[in-house]
Amino acid sequence: MILNRLRYLQDNYALKLLRIIDSIAYRPFYRAPFTKDLKATADQYKAIWKEAINSRYPQIDSFETAHGAAINTDWLNQLALQTQVVVKDSEICFQHGRLLYAALAEYIRSPAISHVNILETGTARGFSSLCMAKALDDAKVSGKITTFDILPHDQPILWNCIADIDGPKSRAELLLEYEPLLEKYLVFIQGDSKLQHKKVHSHRIHFAFLDGAHTFDDVMFEFGFVENKQLPGDIIFFDDYTPKLFPGIVAGVDEICAQSNYSKEVISIGDQRGYVLAIKQ
Image (cartoon, rainbow, N blue to C red; front, side, top):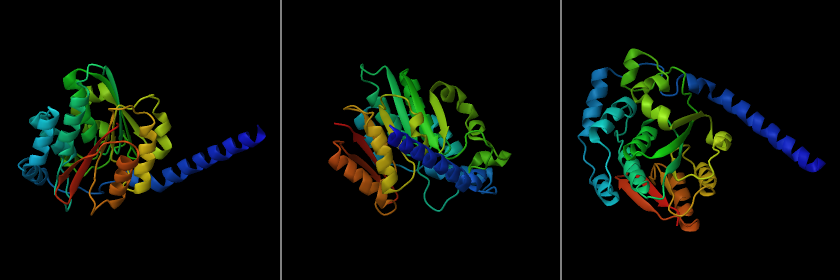
């Protein structure tokens, strides 16, 4: 009894210490995680956006056809202008929004599904969360999307997006146009998912989108938490399955699908973008 109590106190102290270190380490990051200054004009962001929406992705078209669902293109593109079009060296690609919508829409067509619990790691500006919320709303299915990120939801910052033209905004302000969907489906949790995952009280996670830290250990930790809350047919969608850029993610996903009885559907868009749809068998 005494030994167990000492172990509890030790573990609890270690967790509190880790949280303090985490908050101190990320404090400067919270103030300017993407940029300290305006990165582009509105016209420059729109030019990047127009180039992105004119790109064609036959692999994504085929995925939508195979899964029998496709998100409204105009809605997706408008959301992407606000949340995905940024100034960076690599090509802008927000096709995972189409993939998430199609995979989730097919999943919730099952008559056995009346309420869906979704877990996301890596909220960022909220693009993926809203694409999944759109799928639930279009199907008129009840659900909750719990999404984790170290970024605060209510603190004004610059996001390296077109909304920065009007000055710093919180994520809540950035997504004000989508507030009905946020209020209906989204639960935002700030912090490292390793520290905050216990806030997920759902006994089942029907669908998970894992896009947090990009290391083997992080992928395996997040999977370990999700796996214990899934039944056959439930889904994990992995982002950034790209061997040249994120070998840790690739190694983790390959191990999961080989050893933990998950199927693996790989969707690749060149060398820069890859995704995996994994279904528990």
